[in-house]
Image (cartoon, rainbow, N blue to C red; front, side, top):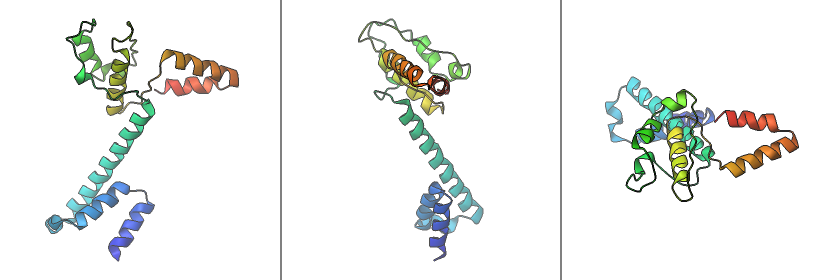
Amino acid sequence: MLNEQTIATLNSLKLFGMVRGFEERLNSPRRAELSHAEFVGLLMQDERTYRDNQRLKRLLRNTRLRQPAALEDIDYRHPRGLSKSVILELGSTQWLTTHRNVLITGPTGIGKSYLACARGNYAAQAGYPALYLRAPRLFESLQQARGDGSHLKTLAGLAKV
């Protein structure tokens, strides 16, 4: 009965990672080997992991990526004018922390969207908010915002990513 009350209390406190870890550890045969401090410490780690995973899911969902892409999967054999050193530089978080922008240009079908999605995916996994918008959609939403009076709010929202 006490375990059910503990689970109910953890749920009411919205500590869902701890609930999952608590239930798993109660059913584990290695439970007796852990001290109380180790048990609580593992529950705290479970909660931290759960929250980190939820944050990553939210960041990835909010980026609105068109395709799952990764910088590691870029093919440099195709003659596109991609410099591996530039891509590796973009593979660090330094350009994010210094608030630098990336502009990707080129002819149709060369992989601009893939590169943008790979950058957005990387930024989200590094804990930064990102947003994938093509230029026509961006200009349309800014024009709409200007028309309905929410221009400053829209600009503030874009400034956050």
